[in-house]
Amino acid sequence: MVVAKRFIAGAVCPRCASMDRIRTWEQHGIRYRDCVSCDFFEQLPIEEETPAELETRVNRIRQSQQRNDIQAVKILDPKRK
Image (cartoon, rainbow, N blue to C red):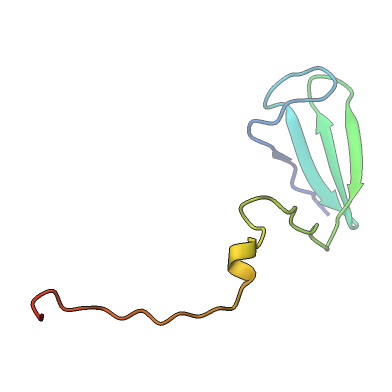
């Protein structure tokens, strides 16, 4: 069985700091990465579960949004007096 190895565009090798020299492939549920310039090699298990989103000021519910006070808005016609 032939395994397709792909280069990762823009990736920098953690050992030799060469750019665009890292290739990756998957085999038997394990993800592999290596550098073609040096002898860097890494294997990682393929994680099916995505990590939870970090809470930031953008996705956090503000106190003003937590209140359920609904107020009706009445649109006035400027021509009517």
